[in-house]
Amino acid sequence: MFSAIFKMALTSLKNRKMRTFLAMLGVVIGVTSVTALIAIGQGAAGDITSRINSMGTNLIVFSAMQDADKIRQDDIDALKSSGPFLDIIPIIQGQVNAESGSRSVRTSLEGVTPEHAEVRQLNVTSGRFIRSIDVEQRLRVCVVGTELATELFGNTDVVGRQVQIEGLPFLIVGILEGKGQSLMGSQDNRVLIPMTYAQTITGSKTSSTWYASASSEAEVNNAVSMIESMLKKRVGEDNYNVYSQSEMLKMAGDVTGIMTAMLGGIAAISLLVGGIGIMNIMLVSVVERTREIGIRKAIGARRAHILLQFLAESVLITVIGGLVGMALGALLSALMGSILGVSSSFSVGTAGLALGFSMAIGLIFGLYPAAKASRMMPVEALRYE
Amino acid sequence: MIEMDKITKIYDMGEEEVRALNGINLSIQEGEFISITGASGSGKSTLMNIIGCLDKPTGGSYRLDGSEVAELGDRELADIRGRKIGFIFQGFNLLPTLTALENVALPLVYQGVGGSGERKQRAKEALEQVGLGDRMRHLPSQLSGGQQQRVAIARALVTKPSIILADEPTGNLDSKTGAELLELFTKLNKQGHTLILITHELNIARHAKRRIRIMDGRIVSDKGVGA
Ligand SMILES: Nc1ncnc2c1ncn2[C@@H]1O[C@H](COP(=O)(O)OP(=O)(O)OP(=O)(O)O)[C@@H](O)[C@H]1O
Ligand SMILES: [Mg+2]
Image 1 (cartoon, each protein chain N blue to C red):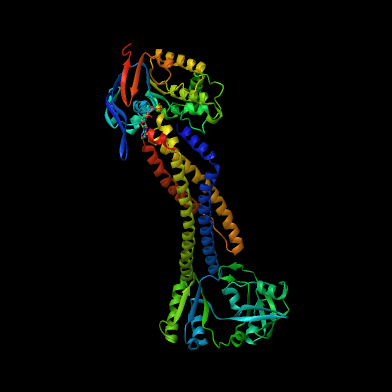
Image 2: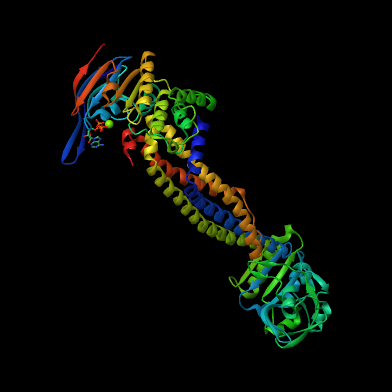
């Protein structure tokens, strides 16, 4: 009997192809958008996490918000020699114009020392990294990212060529390994120059940000408290920030969590609209089929039979539409991921949730009018034109 | 088995009320063959709908096989409509999207008759009984009025109900098929089915053992009781 009723539901959907298609479309769009947007959100979160991880292991970033000049090289050296540190390197950063011939590119400049290569996992694919002698003698050499090289020269075969940075000529000695796009922008549009020269170009005498690497994971907390006590002494309470990698991961996780929830929320609205679409069509369909319900009741259909039939119809619409939506969502998230340059992580769980939600809406609102019609006396339903 | 006492059906049309049935007292035994005649609008269909448990009377008591119909729940009424009664409607009431065979098999689905093979077989037999064995795969829209009428009859017969109610069953048939149908009804009655049919054709009414006339919602003559 179940299979017979199910077959009738299928037939009645086939007999109303356009309507079935439209009802299904709402579910397809809803499930697709939820699946795709959440996949993108989670993918982006994964990107940010792996980017933080790629900055180096056991990394601690600290900065002074004011009075950075009160932190002397002696303080840094004292920390360095105190045990839990592998290295501590200053960072000088700024936005500069890089030019070659008539081309000019806005790029981010970083002053580095040879230690940066290891602590921040910066590798060169051709040429070499900045060396100690470059730093000591303040040589005008630089390492450029692949995107910057391409924008300036049209290719990445640029070791040995010259680039003008804020009007000063620099010799390109190396090309950085590509790190790809991230939501925070390209990581390949940058130029690294010796730390000592960066101070001249950006105009800041001292660094206000340092990267420190702890000698082991177990030493991270110890290292953080040593940095904090030094900073407290020099710039005072509340005037500094210290982040260990795990803290940065947590912060990033919070931010991307909010982002994913927002994307999911927007998508859920389209799902709701899809659900309302089903409801609308089920309502019309049930009213239109009052007479059919009357006939079925007149020849012995119980209320449960009628409800079961409409239930089967909404379930069919939502399940088929939902499966199509899941497939499209997986496809779309992969597509959007490659366009936006983030990885996407399709999850069957979210897709299933979206499917269940639209199904519930279809059922609830489809069942109500069906229940109403199934309660009528057959003559009343039969009289309906 | 059918006992009606002071049955009324009143349609409240706002200012005025229509008394479609105005105090029907009727008792019908198992195996009777009854015709109901009367002018258009006299209340024949209304009475038939109440007998078939498709409608509820406004007042009075209707007992079917000893139970008071007004006290039955939806599920029991559905089962009575499905098993006990075969209803042939004035306007056929076939489902337009189902084939003749599927229409006829439908009551068996709701009765919970096992496999689709068995349902098809029984539906086929019912269609052959009304001479439509060669039109089983047709949709109602692909059938003539008389053929649709016969599909509706086959649907009423398929469950082998103890009571068959027919509202103008020969209205759309030529005299030859009408006569064949009458023969079928007579045969069914001989097999023990109770038969109640509404008609305005006197030669059909004449075949019934008991003849009831209705006027303005009342029974004005009842001939052949117990014959
Ligand atoms: N739903 C309704 N609302 C109001 N009045 C109705 C309704 N149904 C029937 N009536 C009235 O009840 C009376 C009896 O109708 P009924 O259909 O029983 O007549 P009938 O004897 O079957 O006529 P016919 O031979 O034309 O089929 C008619 O006057 C009709 O107008
Ligand atoms: Mg009538």
